[in-house]
Amino acid sequence: MRRPEFIARQSARPSGILGRVIAWIMARETAGGNAAARRLLELAPTDHVLEIGFGHGHNVLEIARAVPDGLVAGIDHSADMHALASALCGPLVASGRVRLSCADSSDLPYGDTTFDKAVAMNTLYFWPDPLRQLTELRRVLRHGGRLVLGFRPKDEASRDFPEAVYRFHARADVEQMLARAGFAKVRVEALSSGFLLACAE
Image (cartoon, helix red, strand yellow):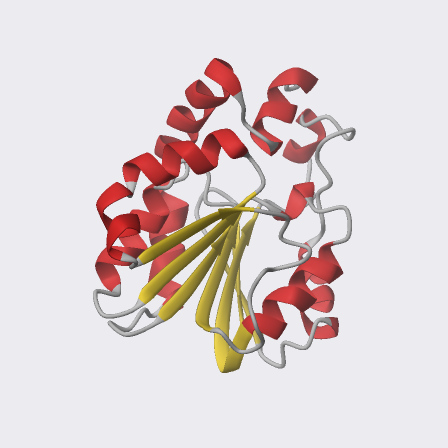
């Protein structure tokens, strides 16, 4: 069943009451994929971690629990999701262990080699120039740092999503983009749902 374009646009940038409803649904639908991504990140207690497109904020919360002596930073371009996640992570934000920003991931507001790990789940479809975002992620990661990029590949099911909002990519194309962005080691794990996790260093 083809997804209506107005729903697709809310998935790309949730806002208002409908955006909060979609965030609530996404928190449940993405829990398994986010848990698998955290496993691949191999989080250490002192890691500094960046999440791109934190949305509802539940993954930020779980990452923060795994890095009690580290830092979690997040970027999302939705002001409504920034407010939602900031409320969910309120005590961690107040303590300085979590720092959330409403910003564009194509120009990350961090210095070179700031983070040990990074994660971006279900955001690739909405990037007009994925290579730019991936190059920025490589820039802010330390030498040997790890990125986990979660995405659904271009396949029969992806035809149900409006092309005006979503841009799906084949697995091989994503691997090539990661290599061009400066990641020397790339491996891809497929979940039972068909969702892919690219682990790049």
